[in-house]
Image (cartoon, rainbow, N blue to C red):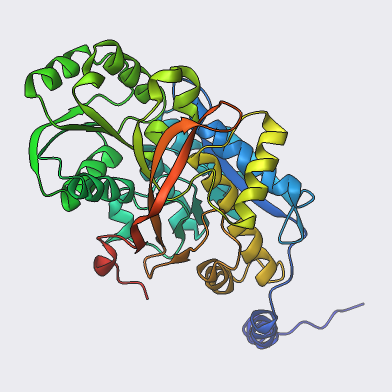
Length: 402
């Protein structure tokens, strides 16, 4: 029995005629709700600076747990990877999470050099990166990207607040120390932007350095009124121990960014931290309901007090939760997800918070001091009104986003 067949040219025309309206119909169909939310979490979870990534991770997972294992009403699958404090490992984990695991969001990174190695993969794939810490200045300005949201603070901001405080106190000279990488450079630039006195010295150390005998000898010789350092994690622990051990604390005021005098530093250093001042956007005692719940639940879950890193990890989860909820789980609608993220409809543990046009935060920065609470524990206590109120960043005018 013979079978009728159209000529090849007519078959192609007919196929195209059927396919065209079908494609239009599919394109016009609304995005379907996802059955779960997948989050790629890359952070420093081993080595001398592991405490920072661990705090971010623990607080992020706590927020998910308190939400019944969900984000925005959908089951949450958080895929955790240790970047080992190595940019190349961080980049590989970003590629794995995005290309193989096909995550909806990325988050977790502590250090700017690791972020800058991995985040281009997110931008290329249009995957939203929610930053619980690293927020380098290039991404606030000319290299801003619609898929990057900083939930923490611009790299410069703690340091700008510290510079303003040093100016307010009338310190005539300052010695500056930071590691030689993007965040270290941003930190000292921020301090100098708001400090009106004399710079007695400015030193950039190796990232991860733990012996500061040479730097402390130079500080002793310079005799500044105040010493300001940006040395997160294990770097800061060793530096403060050596600073106090060298007897320099008797003659020189040590001023720190918030994470340089927070619980992860206080625990191993001990009473030598008493009386150290620092600047931060958050404190254990900020009087809002979201913060009181967070501090109590974190201590209950992990038997330790949270740090600024933990506060940022918790807020990062709450931001994702709010965005997924607002788009009703339709995560393929990238424009709607971005709009929901920008709206930031969640109760932050820091109180007032909103995004600037470059998707970096506008928020308050406070002076804190290390003292003892009612239980005799060493903690940071906030002091009075903000040093900087509703403060943005110095780079937003260079960002073309609206």
